[in-house]
Amino acid sequence: MSRDLDVLVVGGGAIGICSAYFLAEQGLQVTIVEQKEVASGCSGANAGLIVPSHSIPLASPGVLCQGLKWMLKPESPFYIKLRFSPILFNWLRRFRKASKYQQMLLGLHTLRDLNYSSLELFDHIISSESLSCDYRKDGWLLAYRTDKGLNKALDEARLLEDHDIDVKILSADDTLKMEPMLRDEITGGIFFPDDAHLDPERFVLALTELLQERGVNIHRQTKVLALEISNGHIKIARTTKEDFKPKQVVLAAGAWSPELVQNLSHELLVQPAKGYSISVKKPDSYPSLPLYLGEAKVAVTPLEDILRFAGTMELSGMDFSINRRRVDAIMHAARDYLRELEVLEIIDTRYGFRPCTPDGLPLIERFPGYDNLIVATGHCMLGISLAPITGKLVSQLVRGQTPDMDLSSFRVDRFR
Ligand SMILES: Cc1cc2nc3c(=O)[nH]c(=O)nc-3n(C[C@H](O)[C@H](O)[C@H](O)COP(=O)(O)OP(=O)(O)OC[C@H]3O[C@@H](n4cnc5c(N)ncnc54)[C@H](O)[C@@H]3O)c2cc1C
Image (cartoon, rainbow, N blue to C red):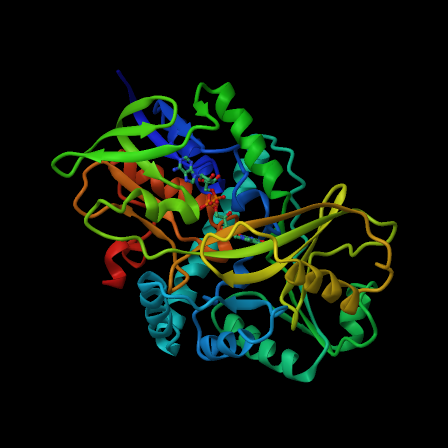
């Protein structure tokens, strides 16, 4: 016996929960299935930065060469584990293509527009729903220890400035004045005043609580095993607990999404890119601003009771192990850039799989050839930043409305 419902959302991460929020707001009867716990995936394990300043896609000139050099260093921030995998090979081929300057610029425009729309929605949702999630609009300070690192970052900052993203370029002295916990070796910094941050897990959980109050069903510890199709229509979603017969399905299963469409007409070109976050009890002295430790590529986010360090990007497939050398490299970087962090009480070390497309843009579309399946994944390094706008666009697709934005850049078949 299958249960009939309006919309089934697969995945209880930021994207699934924000989609459910906007769908429920439209009066639809929504059910969410999550294989573990809400926010147990990438959406709980990240830095919580809402960053229009991060609108340059990862695929940009020179990145692949740098990645190949870093492959030889086990503690490097970007790592590709080479293995026989036609899917990885195809992904890297597309990544290389997307790294061309003109394509990177198109990606930058698109991500900037998505980011600013999402930021407005964060303001609206958090204030109108009185969500308690430590949301702050303090900007984001990037700090560099070498001239080489700083100069590369300045090129990117100027590019962002040319594309209407507010940037403040700072001398070493001004960087230290802005954040006195940085060490004197800092050569300079860049400040992005428009950026914000929050506690990502608290945001997702607070929204989930609200959804439950509004009648959204949430099935935890329930894994979707298969989407059964007939004539271009998802008929039944089989799960480990019960079967559902939804009118519409939203696939928001993050880095796991490709598994669920293996039997459909198109593959989803999404690779899991593992990253770590280490939360420590807030020490007596801590940075007041969210930071980016430039050369080490480590984000530092001060939250209510914790200080969180996050970094590394490993293209190593669904590898569920914790690589101690990489975790240690994050903590070493913290001490290299910041003073007074000698004794830290680690509360939690987590990892998450960023769902990465080759061009760094998400996949948001009605799945080609299927009348009742909407895909919302592939947000790479920006899944928290872009969750509200994605949720809104998904709800418009489900309702058959014209989306607020042109979705052609987010097509599933763009990598064919
Ligand atoms: C270290 C690190 C730092 C980051 N920092 C930032 C940041 O500062 N700002 C930012 O914007 N982004 C950041 N990101 C990226 C961001 O965390 C992700 O893009 C985002 O969380 C992806 O959300 P999601 O909902 O698509 O995926 P997830 O959060 O992974 O959610 C997918 C969910 O689907 C569930 N699921 C999977 N398969 C099934 C199934 N078959 N049945 C039922 N449920 C299923 C999973 O259990 C999971 O809970 C960071 C990522 C990492 C790793």
